[in-house]
Image 1 (spheres, rainbow, N blue to C red):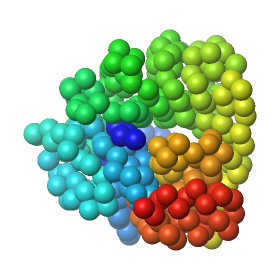
Image 2: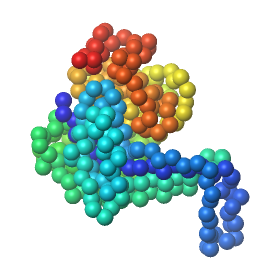
Image 3: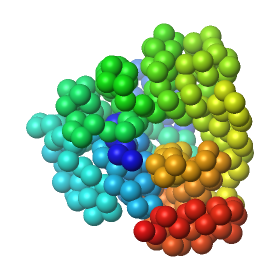
Image 4: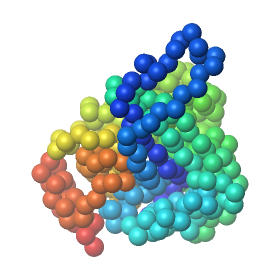
Length: 318
Protein backbone atom coordinates (compact mmCIF):
# COMPACT_ATOMS: atom_id res chain seq x y z
CA UNK A 1 0.00 0.00 0.00
CA UNK A 2 1.29 3.44 -0.99
CA UNK A 3 0.66 5.86 1.88
CA UNK A 4 1.28 9.60 1.45
CA UNK A 5 1.85 11.63 4.61
CA UNK A 6 1.15 15.36 4.73
CA UNK A 7 1.74 17.53 7.77
CA UNK A 8 4.27 19.51 9.74
CA UNK A 9 8.02 19.02 9.48
CA UNK A 10 10.00 20.80 12.18
CA UNK A 11 13.11 21.07 14.27
CA UNK A 12 12.53 21.17 18.03
CA UNK A 13 15.08 23.21 20.00
CA UNK A 14 14.71 22.18 23.65
CA UNK A 15 16.53 24.07 26.43
CA UNK A 16 16.59 23.82 30.21
CA UNK A 17 16.91 26.70 32.66
CA UNK A 18 18.17 25.62 36.11
CA UNK A 19 16.26 28.34 37.97
CA UNK A 20 12.63 29.45 38.22
CA UNK A 21 10.96 31.75 35.72
CA UNK A 22 8.65 33.14 38.38
CA UNK A 23 11.62 34.49 40.35
CA UNK A 24 12.73 36.55 37.35
CA UNK A 25 9.39 38.19 36.61
CA UNK A 26 8.33 41.44 38.26
CA UNK A 27 4.53 41.68 37.97
CA UNK A 28 4.59 45.48 38.36
CA UNK A 29 7.00 45.78 35.38
CA UNK A 30 5.30 43.49 32.88
CA UNK A 31 4.78 46.30 30.37
CA UNK A 32 8.57 46.68 30.13
CA UNK A 33 9.56 43.04 30.48
CA UNK A 34 12.99 42.20 29.07
CA UNK A 35 14.46 38.85 30.07
CA UNK A 36 17.29 36.63 28.91
CA UNK A 37 17.86 33.19 30.41
CA UNK A 38 21.22 31.45 30.52
CA UNK A 39 20.33 27.82 29.84
CA UNK A 40 22.46 24.87 30.88
CA UNK A 41 21.52 22.45 28.10
CA UNK A 42 20.10 22.44 24.60
CA UNK A 43 19.20 19.71 22.16
CA UNK A 44 17.86 19.84 18.64
CA UNK A 45 15.40 17.10 17.83
CA UNK A 46 14.00 16.13 14.46
CA UNK A 47 10.23 16.47 14.70
CA UNK A 48 6.99 17.25 12.94
CA UNK A 49 3.95 14.98 12.72
CA UNK A 50 4.48 13.67 9.17
CA UNK A 51 8.11 12.49 9.58
CA UNK A 52 7.40 11.19 13.09
CA UNK A 53 4.73 8.87 11.65
CA UNK A 54 6.89 8.01 8.66
CA UNK A 55 9.87 7.10 10.87
CA UNK A 56 7.94 4.32 12.64
CA UNK A 57 6.51 3.05 9.36
CA UNK A 58 10.02 2.85 7.91
CA UNK A 59 11.35 0.97 10.95
CA UNK A 60 8.66 -1.63 10.29
CA UNK A 61 9.64 -2.10 6.66
CA UNK A 62 7.48 0.33 4.70
CA UNK A 63 8.62 3.23 2.50
CA UNK A 64 6.06 5.99 3.09
CA UNK A 65 6.12 9.19 1.08
CA UNK A 66 6.02 12.63 2.71
CA UNK A 67 4.67 15.71 0.93
CA UNK A 68 5.65 18.92 2.72
CA UNK A 69 7.38 22.26 2.33
CA UNK A 70 10.71 22.62 4.14
CA UNK A 71 13.46 25.21 4.47
CA UNK A 72 16.99 25.60 3.17
CA UNK A 73 18.29 23.98 6.39
CA UNK A 74 16.66 20.63 5.58
CA UNK A 75 19.58 18.77 3.95
CA UNK A 76 20.72 16.93 7.10
CA UNK A 77 17.14 15.97 8.02
CA UNK A 78 16.46 14.71 4.49
CA UNK A 79 19.57 12.53 4.56
CA UNK A 80 18.46 11.00 7.88
CA UNK A 81 14.96 10.19 6.61
CA UNK A 82 16.23 8.69 3.37
CA UNK A 83 18.73 6.57 5.31
CA UNK A 84 15.95 4.97 7.39
CA UNK A 85 13.75 4.34 4.34
CA UNK A 86 11.41 7.35 3.97
CA UNK A 87 10.73 8.71 0.47
CA UNK A 88 11.41 12.48 0.63
CA UNK A 89 11.11 13.24 -3.10
CA UNK A 90 7.92 15.27 -2.51
CA UNK A 91 9.46 17.39 0.27
CA UNK A 92 9.95 20.76 -1.41
CA UNK A 93 12.65 23.20 -0.28
CA UNK A 94 11.32 26.78 -0.26
CA UNK A 95 14.11 29.32 -0.92
CA UNK A 96 14.52 32.00 1.73
CA UNK A 97 12.79 30.02 4.48
CA UNK A 98 13.93 27.92 7.41
CA UNK A 99 12.20 24.64 8.23
CA UNK A 100 9.48 25.16 10.86
CA UNK A 101 11.03 25.37 14.31
CA UNK A 102 9.85 25.03 17.90
CA UNK A 103 11.91 26.75 20.60
CA UNK A 104 11.15 25.82 24.20
CA UNK A 105 12.89 26.65 27.47
CA UNK A 106 11.80 24.73 30.55
CA UNK A 107 12.66 25.63 34.15
CA UNK A 108 13.17 23.22 37.01
CA UNK A 109 9.44 23.12 37.86
CA UNK A 110 8.58 22.24 34.21
CA UNK A 111 7.20 25.73 33.55
CA UNK A 112 7.85 26.49 29.90
CA UNK A 113 8.32 29.50 27.64
CA UNK A 114 8.11 28.60 23.97
CA UNK A 115 7.87 30.01 20.46
CA UNK A 116 6.91 28.37 17.17
CA UNK A 117 8.15 29.61 13.81
CA UNK A 118 6.12 28.11 10.95
CA UNK A 119 8.76 28.91 8.34
CA UNK A 120 8.34 26.94 5.14
CA UNK A 121 5.24 25.21 6.53
CA UNK A 122 3.31 28.47 6.07
CA UNK A 123 3.29 27.91 2.29
CA UNK A 124 2.42 24.20 2.36
CA UNK A 125 -0.76 24.86 0.37
CA UNK A 126 1.35 25.56 -2.72
CA UNK A 127 1.62 21.78 -3.10
CA UNK A 128 -1.15 19.63 -4.56
CA UNK A 129 -2.13 15.98 -4.21
CA UNK A 130 -3.53 16.13 -7.75
CA UNK A 131 0.06 16.48 -8.99
CA UNK A 132 1.34 13.42 -7.10
CA UNK A 133 2.18 10.40 -9.23
CA UNK A 134 1.55 7.58 -8.76
CA UNK A 135 -1.69 8.34 -6.98
CA UNK A 136 -1.51 7.14 -3.35
CA UNK A 137 -3.80 4.50 -1.88
CA UNK A 138 -4.24 6.52 1.33
CA UNK A 139 -3.40 10.10 2.35
CA UNK A 140 -2.78 11.21 5.93
CA UNK A 141 -3.96 14.80 6.51
CA UNK A 142 -2.24 15.76 9.77
CA UNK A 143 -1.50 19.12 11.49
CA UNK A 144 -0.15 21.61 9.01
CA UNK A 145 -0.87 25.14 7.82
CA UNK A 146 -4.69 25.33 8.10
CA UNK A 147 -5.18 26.24 4.42
CA UNK A 148 -3.06 23.24 3.41
CA UNK A 149 -5.12 20.87 5.56
CA UNK A 150 -8.31 22.20 3.99
CA UNK A 151 -6.89 21.90 0.47
CA UNK A 152 -5.53 18.37 0.85
CA UNK A 153 -8.75 17.00 2.38
CA UNK A 154 -10.78 18.61 -0.44
CA UNK A 155 -8.45 17.17 -3.08
CA UNK A 156 -8.79 13.69 -1.59
CA UNK A 157 -12.57 13.97 -1.75
CA UNK A 158 -12.48 15.23 -5.33
CA UNK A 159 -10.03 12.54 -6.46
CA UNK A 160 -11.74 9.74 -4.55
CA UNK A 161 -8.66 8.97 -2.45
CA UNK A 162 -9.33 7.60 1.07
CA UNK A 163 -7.77 9.78 3.75
CA UNK A 164 -6.98 9.73 7.44
CA UNK A 165 -7.99 13.01 9.08
CA UNK A 166 -5.82 13.85 12.08
CA UNK A 167 -6.44 17.48 13.11
CA UNK A 168 -4.63 17.03 16.45
CA UNK A 169 -3.49 20.35 17.96
CA UNK A 170 -5.14 22.28 15.14
CA UNK A 171 -8.53 21.36 16.64
CA UNK A 172 -8.08 24.44 18.85
CA UNK A 173 -7.88 26.68 15.77
CA UNK A 174 -10.41 25.05 13.47
CA UNK A 175 -14.10 25.96 13.60
CA UNK A 176 -16.82 23.32 13.95
CA UNK A 177 -17.95 23.74 10.33
CA UNK A 178 -14.36 23.21 9.15
CA UNK A 179 -13.96 20.06 11.20
CA UNK A 180 -17.32 18.75 10.01
CA UNK A 181 -16.49 19.47 6.38
CA UNK A 182 -13.17 17.64 6.48
CA UNK A 183 -14.48 14.68 8.46
CA UNK A 184 -17.06 14.23 5.73
CA UNK A 185 -15.58 11.71 3.35
CA UNK A 186 -12.64 10.76 5.60
CA UNK A 187 -12.03 7.05 6.06
CA UNK A 188 -10.30 7.48 9.44
CA UNK A 189 -10.49 10.08 12.21
CA UNK A 190 -7.62 9.94 14.71
CA UNK A 191 -7.52 12.11 17.84
CA UNK A 192 -6.85 11.93 21.56
CA UNK A 193 -9.57 11.91 24.19
CA UNK A 194 -9.43 15.66 24.86
CA UNK A 195 -9.44 16.52 21.15
CA UNK A 196 -12.40 14.21 20.62
CA UNK A 197 -14.32 16.14 23.27
CA UNK A 198 -13.50 19.42 21.51
CA UNK A 199 -14.55 18.01 18.14
CA UNK A 200 -17.90 16.92 19.60
CA UNK A 201 -18.40 20.31 21.24
CA UNK A 202 -17.47 22.34 18.15
CA UNK A 203 -19.45 20.26 15.64
CA UNK A 204 -22.39 19.41 17.88
CA UNK A 205 -21.97 15.76 16.85
CA UNK A 206 -21.76 12.78 19.20
CA UNK A 207 -19.96 9.54 18.34
CA UNK A 208 -22.87 7.88 16.44
CA UNK A 209 -23.29 11.07 14.40
CA UNK A 210 -19.56 11.24 13.61
CA UNK A 211 -19.71 7.62 12.43
CA UNK A 212 -22.28 8.65 9.84
CA UNK A 213 -19.50 10.63 8.16
CA UNK A 214 -16.29 8.74 9.08
CA UNK A 215 -15.92 4.99 8.74
CA UNK A 216 -13.35 4.43 11.51
CA UNK A 217 -12.72 6.58 14.60
CA UNK A 218 -9.66 5.97 16.79
CA UNK A 219 -9.43 7.79 20.12
CA UNK A 220 -6.17 7.51 22.05
CA UNK A 221 -6.33 7.73 25.85
CA UNK A 222 -2.70 7.91 26.97
CA UNK A 223 -1.83 5.31 29.61
CA UNK A 224 -5.39 3.97 29.35
CA UNK A 225 -4.83 2.72 25.80
CA UNK A 226 -7.03 3.54 22.81
CA UNK A 227 -10.46 2.66 21.48
CA UNK A 228 -11.44 2.09 17.87
CA UNK A 229 -15.04 2.55 16.75
CA UNK A 230 -16.90 1.64 13.59
CA UNK A 231 -20.65 1.39 13.03
CA UNK A 232 -20.45 -2.34 13.78
CA UNK A 233 -17.80 -2.76 16.43
CA UNK A 234 -15.80 -1.27 19.27
CA UNK A 235 -12.23 -2.44 19.86
CA UNK A 236 -10.21 -1.60 22.97
CA UNK A 237 -6.45 -1.42 22.44
CA UNK A 238 -4.38 -1.79 25.64
CA UNK A 239 -0.99 -0.20 26.23
CA UNK A 240 2.23 -2.19 26.43
CA UNK A 241 4.08 -1.91 29.79
CA UNK A 242 7.00 0.46 29.40
CA UNK A 243 10.52 -0.36 30.59
CA UNK A 244 10.91 3.29 31.61
CA UNK A 245 9.20 6.58 30.87
CA UNK A 246 11.59 9.10 29.34
CA UNK A 247 9.69 11.47 27.03
CA UNK A 248 6.08 11.39 25.74
CA UNK A 249 6.84 13.61 22.72
CA UNK A 250 5.76 11.88 19.52
CA UNK A 251 4.14 8.87 21.19
CA UNK A 252 0.83 9.46 19.40
CA UNK A 253 2.62 9.75 16.07
CA UNK A 254 4.42 6.44 16.67
CA UNK A 255 1.05 4.83 17.45
CA UNK A 256 -0.32 6.08 14.14
CA UNK A 257 2.73 4.80 12.28
CA UNK A 258 2.40 1.32 13.76
CA UNK A 259 -1.34 1.24 13.16
CA UNK A 260 -0.88 2.21 9.50
CA UNK A 261 1.67 -0.55 8.98
CA UNK A 262 -0.91 -3.06 10.20
CA UNK A 263 -3.59 -1.50 7.99
CA UNK A 264 -1.29 -1.62 4.95
CA UNK A 265 -0.86 -5.37 5.50
CA UNK A 266 -4.60 -5.95 5.74
CA UNK A 267 -4.61 -6.94 9.43
CA UNK A 268 -7.76 -6.76 11.55
CA UNK A 269 -8.38 -3.65 13.66
CA UNK A 270 -7.26 -5.26 16.91
CA UNK A 271 -3.90 -6.29 15.50
CA UNK A 272 -3.41 -2.87 13.85
CA UNK A 273 -3.98 -1.22 17.21
CA UNK A 274 -1.66 -3.58 19.05
CA UNK A 275 1.15 -2.85 16.59
CA UNK A 276 0.53 0.84 17.19
CA UNK A 277 0.57 0.31 20.95
CA UNK A 278 4.01 -1.30 20.93
CA UNK A 279 5.40 1.27 18.48
CA UNK A 280 4.21 4.00 20.84
CA UNK A 281 5.94 2.56 23.91
CA UNK A 282 9.26 2.33 22.07
CA UNK A 283 8.99 6.08 21.49
CA UNK A 284 8.03 6.73 25.13
CA UNK A 285 11.23 5.04 26.29
CA UNK A 286 13.57 7.46 24.46
CA UNK A 287 14.03 11.24 24.35
CA UNK A 288 12.67 12.72 21.16
CA UNK A 289 10.14 11.46 18.61
CA UNK A 290 12.71 9.80 16.33
CA UNK A 291 15.35 8.57 18.80
CA UNK A 292 14.02 5.03 19.26
CA UNK A 293 15.24 2.18 17.09
CA UNK A 294 14.68 -1.57 16.75
CA UNK A 295 14.96 -4.32 14.18
CA UNK A 296 11.76 -5.86 12.88
CA UNK A 297 12.71 -9.14 14.53
CA UNK A 298 13.17 -7.40 17.90
CA UNK A 299 9.79 -5.73 17.47
CA UNK A 300 8.05 -9.03 16.73
CA UNK A 301 9.70 -10.80 19.66
CA UNK A 302 8.63 -8.08 22.10
CA UNK A 303 5.17 -7.99 20.55
CA UNK A 304 4.67 -11.70 21.22
CA UNK A 305 5.45 -11.19 24.90
CA UNK A 306 2.17 -9.27 25.17
CA UNK A 307 -0.09 -10.16 22.22
CA UNK A 308 -0.97 -13.13 20.00
CA UNK A 309 -0.56 -12.32 16.31
CA UNK A 310 -1.05 -15.89 15.12
CA UNK A 311 2.19 -15.66 13.16
CA UNK A 312 0.88 -12.81 11.00
CA UNK A 313 3.72 -10.41 11.84
CA UNK A 314 6.22 -12.71 10.12
CA UNK A 315 5.25 -10.82 6.95
CA UNK A 316 7.27 -7.87 8.30
CA UNK A 317 10.46 -9.89 7.93
CA UNK A 318 10.06 -10.46 4.19
